[in-house]
Amino acid sequence: MRDTGTTHDLRAAAIARWLAAAEADADARGLPELKPLLQGLAASTAALRAADWNDDADGFPTPASREADRS
Amino acid sequence: MNDWQGETIAELATALARRETTSVALTEWCLERIATLNPRLNAFIAVTADRALTAAHAADRARAAGADTPALHGIPVSLKDLIDEAGVVTTAGSRVRHDAVAAGDATVTRRLREAGAVLVGKTNLHEFAFGTTNEDSGFGAARNPVDDTRVTGGSSGGSASAVATGMSIASIGSDTGGSIRIPAAACGVVGLKPTWGEIPADGAVPLSRQLDHLGPIARTVTDAWLVHETLAGRAPRPDARLAARPLAGTRIGLLRGYFAERLDTEVEAVFDAAVETLRREGAIVEPVEIPHARDIGPVYLHLVLSDAAAYHADTLERRPGDYTPNVRIRLEMGRYVLAEDYVRALRGRAVIAREIDRALAGRDVLLCPTMPVPAPPLGATMVDVGHGQTEPVRNAMLRLTQPFNIGRQPALTIPSGRTRTSGLPVGLQLAAASGHTSGLLEVGLSVERALARR
Image (tube, rainbow over the protein chains, first blue to last red):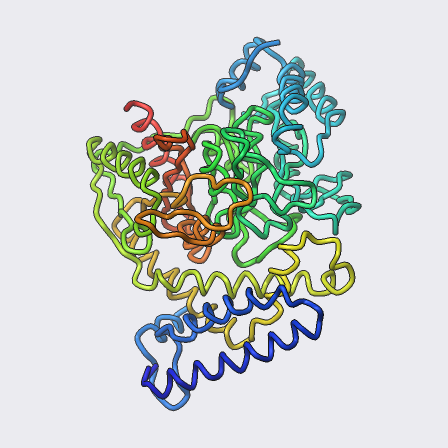
């Protein structure tokens, strides 16, 4: 995966949108105590998405991506 | 009444064969231990005394009739209360299942029963196996038998406590991220997570079917082997013996990086002393790293949250108040994981599994501490992980065991000493290539003996 600054920014924005929606849903369901956990999950998701086995539809597979494909 | 505390299954099987005791006497001894200790330790959710004594009488009659009996024949064993035993409630540590009477035996239960084991009760666990401390149980927290102000570890905390105290001679636990090895290490006993799929998991309430394993908690490596063989459907004879693999020339990969950082300083000291002992015994100890080790936590979290949420979604809607608050809210978190991230985690699991396999190539075992910390105090949310750093309890307790659930390799914890200031047990973890559980136990037996000789 090409981890350019733009990619990083777009990825962070996508996670921020997901987190805002998830927190709003937690509030709507009467589960505000879920919000700190969702923030922790967002950090974990950011790390997962930054891993080098992920690849882009407009690029070429990384060595780690090819490794994942072998399973 | 004899005191059988500290006796191994092999020793008890010999005593039974020589008519030095009976299964009824052993079972009564365990039941007495439960009556004395369980009010303080809360290791058992249900004690099936009448059924156990009936089974013990049957075992004694079979032996008296000259039956050729397996090693576990007449030996009191407990089951983590997420494993089905026909006619007994399987609570999974939750009020959600307070009336869920099992219609049949799990395969592991049936194999134990066919081997003549005496099932004495169902042990406490972190609710639905979804936690590392055994504090969040619908039936109250289990307490560590070494220091009852501390957690047993989890999720199979009642099983480890039962074995450590002689309330049962062995126990069957489950392990999704470390739930056999963590409490075994915290309570000072042996715990084995076999290769994934080696022991049938049907009849066990799942947490994440792709990560769940069933396996033994026992006092010694040989006992763990005897129980494991029984669970695998190969019930060994009482005179069967596990062959120790000589440590001289054994190639051990000492896991570094992720596995060696953020260790409690006393745990680190106990572990380093154990490694030095293995070196002195002639083991070839070489450092090794897992390149994607830092991704293990995110991969594990997305897999287990999603799988658990899928299993619990309907029940969370119908009866949210029947869960313990902490487990309920963690299960709810899983309902927000996106499918795209679950796919990323699946791909990451494949990468990490292959890297662990590669680290094992040309080596007999990998080695690291079982937990970075000793058993934390009840109620703690953060733990000291050395050098002025702290970490959430759950993350710290899972950090070194979950790699081998992701990779599915067999892994074993062996007691390796006690912390200097508080006398708490410290576990040493060995892992071997998938399909090599017996080889892992052979090395484990030699390690256990080498550590005992110090």
